[in-house]
Structure formats: C-alpha cells, structure tokens
Image 1: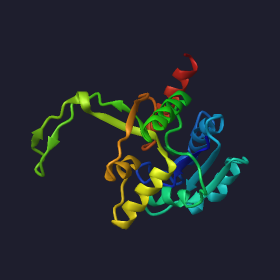
Image 2 (image 1 turned 60 degrees about the horizontal axis):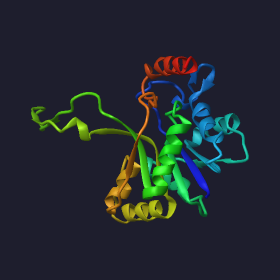
Image 3 (image 1 turned 180 degrees about the vertical axis):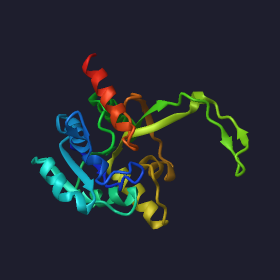
Image 4 (image 1 turned 90 degrees about the horizontal axis):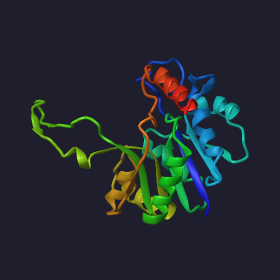
Length: 225
C-alpha cells in the first residue's frame, strides 16, 4: 500500500489580514505549515508528502520542510486546481490523502481512522457533528426550514480517496467545467459514496487572527492530557 499526502497550503490568507502567508505564522515557536506536515511525516502509513504552495512561498517552505519524502507543487487559482497540480506530479499510488495545511492540530488517530474508512469504501472524510441549530434561509434572510441536526456534519480534512477514483472524478469535473471547494463533492458528482469518520473539534482551520491563540490553547491542553 502506497499512500501520498497532499497538503494544500496555497491560499492567500486574506481573512487573516497578515503580511505573510498564514502558514508561516507561529504556534508555540513552530510555523503552522511545519506543524501540519510533521504530523504526516511521522506516520508509517504515509509514504510521500506533496506540499502545494504559492510560488512566492516556495523558497521559504523548502527551507522549513527539508526531507527526502517531501516535494512541492505550485498552487492554482482555486483549491481544485491546486490539488490537480499535485495530482499531475503523481505517477501512481493507492490512496491520496488530502489535508488543509491550515489544520495543524489534526491527530494521527483521525488520519488512520479516515484511511481505514477509505480503504473500506473508496472515499472518506473526517468531520464533526454540528453543535448549533442550523437554519435554511431564503434570499431575504427569512427562515425557510430547519434541517435535523442529527444528520448534519461539518466536514474537515483529511479527505482520503482511492487514487484512480479521485482522478476519474477530477477529470469528469474538468470536462464539465465544474470547480468544487470540497474534494468530496468530486466523488459525489460521479455518484460515489463518501464515508464520514467522526473526528475531533480541535482539528480547527487557521483562518482568522483569533485562531492562533485558540490553537495555542488547544495545544497546551493536549500536552496536559
């Protein structure tokens, strides 16, 4: 079994409002991207890592992430294009493990459980149950319905796919001019099923400035467990 992790870290981070990539911000003395990549780099289940980054960040990322099993791809204009740029560098593998570079607190246990589910179903993603009541609204922001919270899951990453299945779904989307923000949608679009593994609420995505101290607090709490 040969598994390749694709770490997507090519966003411009406009919501962060920082002068540099949010991947280069530090949590307890270590950059976000270093923390994220190190989780996968320490796993026997991951054979290779492809980090997708902006061209302007390539030199710094290369310095921070040395390693025989780590290579780089330059990001595209959208998330889907960024992942495709990584996929285009892969000759063959069994499973592709796609993860947000901005989720540095992901746990090995979650990755392994999601990989197990993907091996069972061909596609799987980590997620957590939605805590709040969610409302559907119309164009005027009037409540139009209330979905049953029992069936609502907030999807995170990793999202893991049998490689040939993912390539087929990606090619189909491109043929039709479709561009998805979530990799699971590619599989859904061709009628495939994606299993969900319930993960951890602390697998947060670093998006705004307030997420840095939050991640630090979660990291401190985890170290005391």
